[in-house]
Length: 144
Image 1 (tube, rainbow, N blue to C red):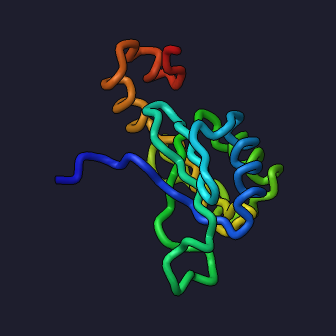
Image 2: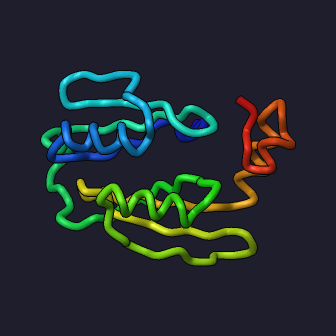
């Protein structure tokens, strides 16, 4: 029944500013846009990141950041966290060891969405098993 996660969407009251912020963060323009919605394909698997104008959010809307946390796997958690903070995100949880080689951190973007970043050898192993060039992926450098 549930075949896998394919899309995550964030809400933003200032959709234009949020689209510009995520475009800078991701280093690419959205591949799809319409009024009140922008979408990028990101990451090793090309999953969809959607950004929706908050006026379309179900009510009542939460007044504090919370809910599910999407953790983005990164090669360098300190560099990723520093970049997010430089772009105007605020610290929610500093880098924390969760287990051997598994670290997480979280910020709140300027629009109230929680973004997690993580390093995890398990992610790299799963990626390696799913890609033709498994050794490069295992080392954290997927083949182009």
